[in-house]
Length: 191
Length: 93
Image (cartoon, rainbow over all chains, first blue to last red; front, side, top):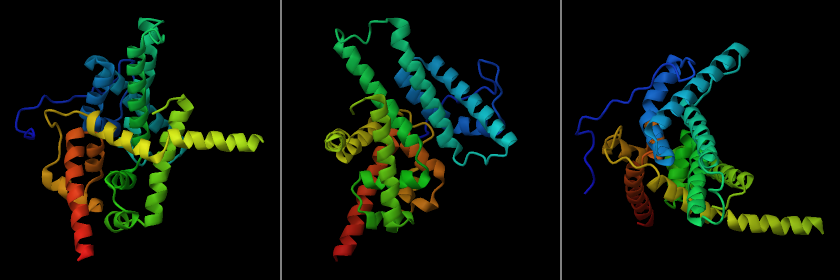
C-alpha cells in the first residue's frame, strides 16, 4: 500500500531571504529555493542528522548562488541556465564540506581503522554525496536519458521517446558516468 | 613500459568503476536516499505517466523531482517498465 499524496496538511517550507551571514537571497533564486527546498533539505537532514543545520546551509548556498548570479550579471556573463540543478549542486557541495569537517571537529581519531563501522558509514555517506553531486550536474534531457537507461531501454528506444538522437543520448549518458568516475577517482573512493 | 603499466592501471580502474557498478549505485541512490514518507510536493500519477511516455511534454521540475524523491522514482520505474514492455510488445507483433 503506497502512502496517499497531498491528503494531510503539510507544514509549509519557508526559506529566509537573508542567510545567517546577512547575505541577501535574490527573489529569482529564492523562488527556486522554495521549490526545491523540501527535497534538498530532507536529503541533507538525512546526511547531517540536524534539520536546523540543513536549512541553515541551504540558505547559505542560496545566498552564495545569488551572489554568483549578481557577479555574472555585472561581468556580462550569461545567466545560469538550470537554476534548480545549480542551486542543488551548490548545496550538496556545502553539505559535503560540512560533513567532512564533522569527524575532525567531533573526534580527531574517528576515522581511525580501529573503528571500522564508523569508517564504513562515513564512506557510504561520502559515496551518496558524490552520487548526488554528479547527478545534480545533469540537465533535464540527460535526466530523462539516465532514467530510461537505468531501466534497460535501448538507445533506439531512448531516441524515439526523448527526442534526441541515439548517438547524442549515448554521449550524454557516458558523460554522466565519466563525471561520476572522475569524482570518485579524484576523491580516491571506491564505489 | 610505462605506457603498458598505465594501460593496466586504467583497465583496473575501469573494472572498479565499471558501468555496471555505477548503474547499480545510481539505482540504489535514487531509490533509497531520498525518502519522502509524507509525499510532499509529489506530482500526480498522471504527470509521472506523461513523464514516462512523453518526457519532452513535461515540465523540467517533474524530472528534477523524480531525481530527488525515492517514492516517485520507484513509481516512475514501474511506469517505465510498463512503457518498455508495451514498446517491445508492439514491435514484436
